[in-house]
Image (cartoon, rainbow, N blue to C red; front, top):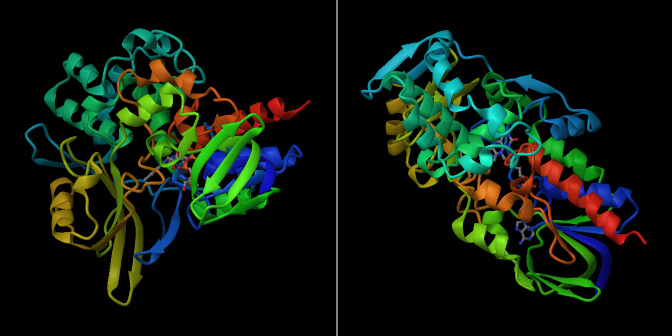
Length: 434
Ligand SMILES: Cc1cc2nc3c(=O)[nH]c(=O)nc-3n(C[C@H](O)[C@H](O)[C@H](O)COP(=O)(O)OP(=O)(O)OC[C@H]3O[C@@H](n4cnc5c(N)ncnc54)[C@H](O)[C@@H]3O)c2cc1C
């Protein structure tokens, strides 16, 4: 049986970072990744005539762990195109069109009111469970909107912006998610918007993660699904789907909460993991790329929170033998309502938020039904953050847990994944040193 110091399960940002740090600290590390590629929930693919991010896309310099990796791997950023037109749906469901400035004026008051108490609720972004959030965590984002008394037009627009951010119906998402994101940007919602949806990495996530993978001293074994982790007095035995068994002194699991049940742990997972995996976290939406005929002014469009697509943006203007076309990226709060094979229903979903376009093709990856993720970008249900975050960070014997789902600062984002990888690499190293 092969024997190593540490097995890292998963080669997303958390796993790659943990493996690199441990390898560079002199430990023998083996990374086991079920997919045939590294990157996890980041995935750059050539589809619809362009390199597309099917998973994560945007990064920002206020994300300190991302920024350190950008510097370390020599990455540059590029700004997504500025919208020249804005579309939204009024309180009566009818279409509105205006400028970006008009839409921002419509949402300004509501965006501030949703997070107005962030300084008391969550004074420090790096300590998301400290503050009045302890009393507020039972609230959903919908509860907060219901209490604000916004003008109906402004309320509809503000709700759709937040549903785009949190990737789930607002009555299922904790207010904590809104507060966390804004606490991470010093209390400024405008900066939060910019940080979460503006700059993408030149060369895409594929080159970014490939560069980190090149820095990992140990082997990264692709196409290798871990099925069980059995602890004993010497550490743990990790078994893969083809029956291979590997002994490790420590194991770092980077599986998302929703997917952790894909591995049989013995002893069983700590109660906190079982509980959250059973409940699932709140995020449950989708991201879809659409090909629309012709070129057009760059726009963004917001539906209502009840539309299949809550957000739609024009990203790339392209041409091929069939003519000019524009690639749009859309987000919806319920993954099952967006089927890239069903162009008629996608056309209807687009018509609802941005009339006048003809959709000719679409592509997406359903991360919610993917057994290796079962999640998009994590947002919590009401109560989960303060009840579970600290415990989710605790190792269980020889098994450590590094995932964006248990990060402090930008939990749910790439930044959180890197933070968790660094944290657990340090803890594992400390536990192995004589
Ligand atoms: C559509 C979408 C859009 C997003 N947009 C953004 C964005 O713009 N900006 C941002 O910062 N974040 C975004 N995110 C979130 C971001 O992608 C994640 O937070 C981050 O990539 C998570 O990294 P991770 O290492 O914690 O988990 P993952 O990337 O999920 O890595 C876990 C790894 O474990 C592997 N694995 C699972 N089970 C097993 C097993 N049994 N055996 C072996 N390997 C296994 C998986 O294949 C995977 O590679 C987005 C996510 C999605 C899905």
